[in-house]
Length: 421
Image 1: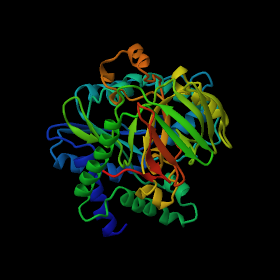
Image 2 (image 1 turned 90 degrees about the vertical axis):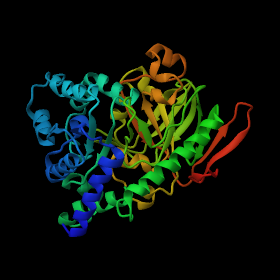
Image 3 (image 1 turned 60 degrees about the horizontal axis):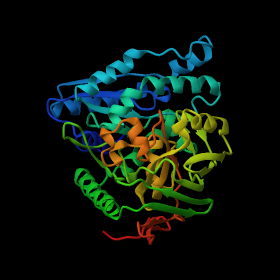
Image 4 (image 1 turned 180 degrees about the vertical axis):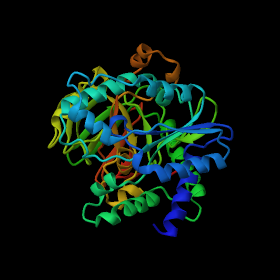
């Protein structure tokens, strides 16, 4: 690796800790793999050591890492007793809960091979995923709904991921190429990446504020294969890059991010939507997806590949068949303009308008964080164990907002913002 690469990696680590996580002096930092069963940090040791070094230099009190190895998970699938896949190491969850409840900072790293488990029994994989999701319910609630700590999800290049993104490159060039693309889409190559991110976050906040003032009752999305109407609950809130923890620390939870987002009314989605990118669900791809909704619920779906997995996702629980998020972002984002399918939900969702099957973020509804599940659902919010992002945007998508008095106003035209701020 070149000195230029080392310089960019140093800047990437600094931006992650100073902007995304916003690590505070005296905080502890907990580093975990992102993605559960299909997640590994074993090939990222030098990068994690760099993060730890930078964290201590910024005043971290303690840095801990929760390791995971894909190869061990594969061995389990191949050789473990067939009735053992609901077994779960609760100490991993308990460790996460301990750090979260103490207000420590968190960093989750996504670096996975989307095809790693292609040849394994999908029923066993689904059992493992459902077991993981069930046991991590409290962790998910504290992080996603209560903003209990400052933290971020980021990506890091590794050989097993890079070979899928750049299969035509020589093997010894792939990982460096993927790192280079990560630096580009994360604005690391700009003269002052920290300033660039601060300006970017401000722009997203301004756009979310515009839509919050509008308080549209309905969104209409149209594109080839898509004709979808999404009702919005009263008191919905459009969020953007900046989140604030319970302790008042601002952070950017998804890094990179290009979106503004809110919750649909769980019972008011109608029509058909065509996905414009594959769904990478914990190491398994679902491709060429088309879904039809009625009264908020999935009533029909098809997929060119992975239909059985999509069926299992939708049947995870009652809320998994309804929407918990609608996110808007321009087609001209750095990720979209790269023209690359990253096979990485964190990155690919920020190339495209997207929806999510499963739970809604309570921060997207006025008073939502104080509501019980029953109250949240009565107000239109969706409750589920899962939250699965599906990319639907393109340079051909138009989005309109319907006001309370029935007026139709343009929000996006051909994938770009149709309003000035």
